[in-house]
Image (cartoon, rainbow over all chains, first blue to last red):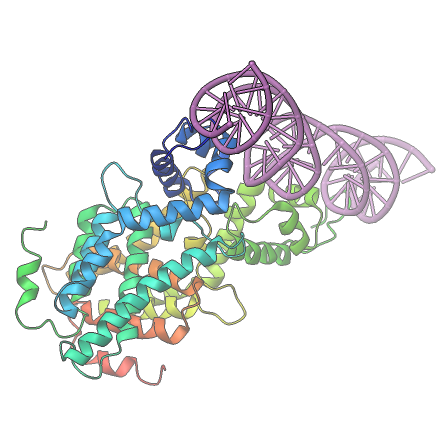
Length: 208
Length: 208
DNA sequence: TTGTTTTCTTAACGAGCGGTACAAAATCAT
DNA sequence: ATGATTTTGTACCGCTCGTTAAGAAAACAA
């Protein structure tokens, strides 16, 4: 496995995890390479050698974040009904943005406030749009399955979920406690069509 | 009115309006004093002379923004019922964050992504908290008036509204069109207690 | 050993940042 | 006119940013 040349003196996976943490707390522009390199336990030129420039490092960190801290999305998409799918997403998001011992909020929402800073805003917006598309497709399938009543707009329902989760991220960063977000997830589900008559009261029990 | 000294060569009100626009588009950290001064049509030392440092300029811009672009909040708080109040707020917010010819999103949400940049994050979080408190108080009064059914939590309802509006701001900045946000406002109101039996279907008509 | 290759450390680069010194210019009061 | 006072324009300060040049150090292959 090892070719010629001096071996790398740090674990790139651990270093990337540390970078995720810093980007999560500080955002893209707010995270300086000095702070990043220090948190990663590595000198700045080694960061460039291993990950490329700041934008590439951020995108690697975003990928890592998605697969490590947004697993609840894939989880929700596999639920049998559209209603359970939506509920699992909102609850999973509320939990994810209020994880004890991790930065409050969502890297994908908080990392960049405003457009034009570079291309990074587009990367995050595309990430949000992708998640939205996945739920819209799921709801389209639910419509075909008859699991969602005809006349409902799958795109509108997906937008509803992503908008709520974006709000959750902002509020979590403001310090809103987990329980408040879970209560809002439950309330919001009252606006989701066709509670399917059975699952609604049961699934929230014992959660808070 | 005019004391001694050379008279100011620019209109401070117009200059502040220009600063609002820049902070709104770029955020606090993203707006450089060079860009601010250029947009204000003023040299940098004159900005300091008229407004103080960047933080003070930002707070003046925020105050201006609140009174010029968040009038829908005071408007909503004066509605006769809690339900109409909530609906007016969500619709007003959806319209405000998608104003044609103005930056998409909300200055109070977008301007600062992450804490610790200085004290500015706290200023904005306090602004959001204040609005939330105003609605919680309004809903407490509604409870006393019997306008909101007993057992409802005014703080939870207020948090629900602010969370939605934060989500609206993020989504608007992503390019979500006004109609989508209005549809979400209407949908979210299905989760708001006690539609009061009369007003719900009527108030949304002719809006989109 | 002697290259070859890769990573390491140190130190610095140019650019842009928020903020300011300084003197010329424009107004008031006397 | 003559100060006193305030704003204006220019030019600059120290600092931090992302990024890189340069050489020492550590592995492999011959």
